[in-house]
Image (cartoon, rainbow, N blue to C red; front, side):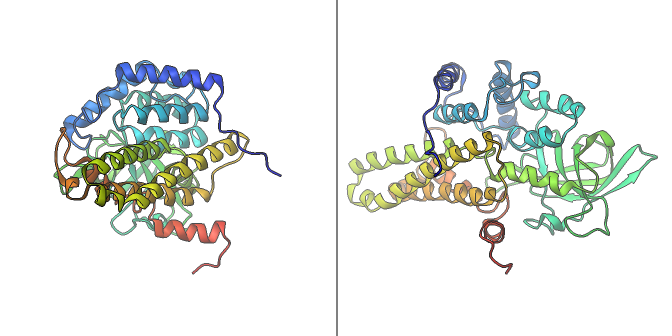
Length: 392
């Protein structure tokens, strides 16, 4: 019989928690004090916050010290994330780099690549965007058409094509993404993972305005862009395996720590309790939704602790990451839908320097089932690779 999971943190982990809590209490800006990171002003304000964290080695606590981290383990990272979201500290403008690319660099990168790219990533001096989607290849990553051809005369590779919906692309300095290096290969083969300096000649960055006018995304155009061999991550023509490692981080442990949702669920419960005093009849009608959202967030926390324990014992996160992604994206929606039900018309009231925060959070949560691979695609992965069901 499997041993029960011990959910208690060690004395050392709790001491780490206390240190992190003290530092955040004395350094983190007040909640929502920084401008939106989807604006030029907000982007730089968030970059400054990353630098302040890095100065005291809080930016990437689980990385080795030589790259700017503290060399602590996965559980300490989860502890830090709990304290970070408890403090309502700013969103991480460097998340594409530190949560997605960095784990891939540790797995597939050379020593030279890690030394070159990780330290400026930790300090926020170089912000990364993700070059996955293309106009005709959204969730179908294997259908990309952007190409890279070998050019000994140029001393590397020449990239052509277009990427779209590049998160943070409007202001980022670097991009990581897939390009087809063997056009005759099968769909998942002949792809290579490149690290591209967006200041390179031939790169055009076109910001994509959102409904609110802010530019959280960009289109990237590559016209004969030269990329040296040193900026190929992993093996040529085997970039699919590298990209799946990045996607596993995006859907699995790295990108969405459970504290993001347990803290939101805690605020939801507080909102419910205050709602009972304002409009008890309407608020009580949302009781089941509030309770279910809180339980879903707690289930995600427990599942993540179980997964982290398994990883520490030598296991890995494979196709289970798809189930994980479905859960956190739908939990985020459930929390915000319950909050809107509690608030009723008050959900649209502006104040506190933020335009209707629960409504704003709900609108962002709507994107969760789409980004990081649509939930429809993830359900197919779960059905085929975890449940062993026949391909539809």
